[in-house]
Image (tube, rainbow, N blue to C red; front, side, top):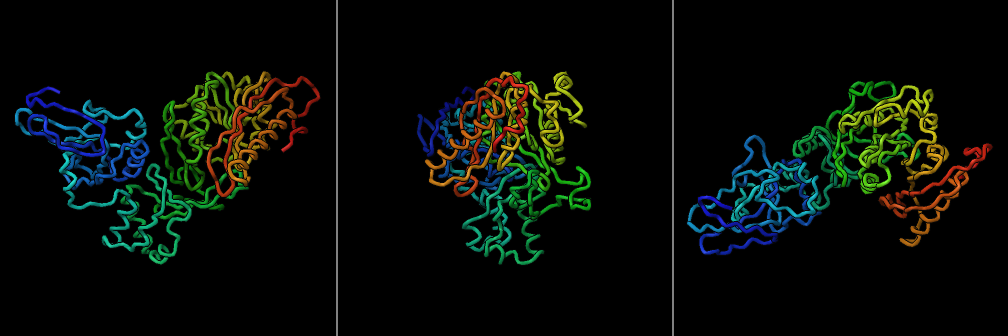
Length: 492
């Protein structure tokens, strides 16, 4: 680094700050990631996961030093990146109130830092080592803990701080876990509607969002996956119909989130009071996005929802994805997600009246087929290389349509299911292999000459002795028997 001050800069990764003399005055500086308060939790979590967060240094608010963003408050999170600035001429060291861009040349970030971090940052700032002692008013980085502290005038009951509820952060929306604020201490504290209303208004303010809710348990037998949301703050539904649902798509609150894969980012859009979004299938979305055998192929996604796997298949290079879905709210979320991701789409009015020639000649990358999977069978019969069956707790009932969707020369099935098997890791492995063997036999009975197991993908634990898994099958040629009826041979 050159200039009038003739500064010699040495940057290093370290958890400690040290004043080292380099023949003159020296200044130790540490790099802080700067973000808005509502992004602090996610940004800190990403830094922790990348081993780039320094727990020995305090997280500080914008009031602790000169605010680089006078129009809004900010939170500064310490990283492990430090540097020693040596001033050979005795000139003043550089100021530390400058907010640097994410790609500033003075910042050398580790290669394992995910790009998703930058979506939550304002920039970076080099702070002198002494800056850690300047804390006019230090508040927790957690927006929820800040709200608790302020609601109780900085003296909250200890039992509310020991195990604070966890949450998921989305666009203008925070979703708390099913048990949030239901324990005895919380029930005792929020013992009136007015107190609860004031508290959650403060929580929303600290997060910088307009809507808060608590998750409810979804009826496992409901194929439409209707969420049981408990609103805590904000209006989720305005004009309602006789069934208690919004009269129109514009009468509901919509949110979104950005999901990163090795192939790129995906935006998902949904109405949380009407449809669900699951973070638990992240590994499967990333796997699909990286599949090497999807390029220029056609994919059928049955029970596709708001497009959990539709968009990873498109990222993987699919020429076209046909998504089947029965929920009008999920279809609208899928449509809005397509717009947000710049994907051309077409929503079919009468899918049973079209054939595969109509489909293949259409320029849209995403074809949305409203209604049951079987209704769109005339469209997707024998044209797909990959078929996704993503309904939980089981998608086995859709195997006949899935096998018919595959090209005569074969393809791949990705079958989701919930496996309830005890016996620890060994028992779960044996149970998964047994279920995969059953699926292979089913596919063979559906008229395919060969079927083999490619892999069993473990997605997440759902509860005691219950796992969400995906069985990936490679399916061979069609049988040539004209009398074969797949719907009479499937065994679930």
